[in-house]
Length: 313
Ligand SMILES: Nc1ncnc2c1ncn2[C@@H]1O[C@H](COP(=O)(O)OP(=O)(O)O)[C@@H](O)[C@H]1O
Ligand SMILES: O=P(O)(O)OC[C@H]1O[C@](O)(COP(=O)(O)O)[C@@H](O)[C@@H]1O
Image (tube, rainbow, N blue to C red; front, side, top):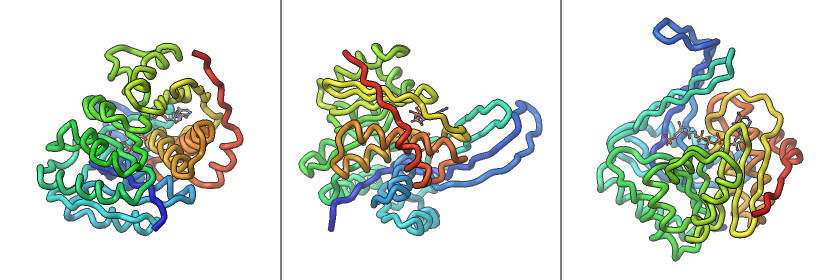
């Protein structure tokens, strides 16, 4: 078997996207249109890897009644090996207000997971990591799963040689970083939360990223929403301004970015190529409502428009 990309989604979700003209709080709101996507961070990463011509195996938790979600992913051509748990996955609301182009996420905590279920996912990940070049650990942890979940996975898959990408927040991110994943992709709010202060300037972001790199993480890719992204390595920092696209929904932009990085690492591309793929994928994602996969044609178009500005430090 050739090397694969493994994505782990501990907290999958059905993303219900609701489009309104404008949200009137305390009133009846009529929905213009809506859609449902099988999502959650690792799953979105896998959907986008597939859309870009790669292969991925989706691991994570799915409830006993959620086999439709696995079927949906298999119909997209993805491999799945979910750990089946008692309780069903959550529903997350993605609210789009057309008039103001405002995007609001309302995420449920997710199903309760017991320690036996958590242990069996860890064992599955260990098995698959030895068949993978890249392992993506992404998203929140559902109730019952301990904050050191990602930390334990990173440590226990080290000997596999697979490169781990971690996209998490809060304590799970903090503890995960201690195990030195290859790449982390916090957004600016998540990195600010980690530092305990609001990071605004490039200099502040670079200063926050460098100690993380000194501790063993190779790449800190910080997404900054409509401001683009800043990717920091041991000796270089690359700023990518946002591309000029029509933004229809920001949900899933970070996941598309991670998909670009994962695919680039899987292909053994250098950091500049990886940043290009990640940025083009993220820009593609914002042009589509909900967390549907990106499309190859616009990706191929946008990748030529990515400009990378090296920031000296
Ligand atoms: N409003 C926006 N306009 C243009 N590009 C955006 C916008 N929001 C996100 N992006 C693109 O998607 C990337 C990831 O978005 P971000 O919101 O920072 O991630 P996350 O979804 O993880 O919070 C950004 O670096 C940028 O390239
Ligand atoms: O696990 P979390 O942090 O609650 O995030 C889950 C949500 O994030 C998404 O994966 C989108 O993430 P991004 O906007 O960060 O790319 C949705 O599919 C899902 O509803």
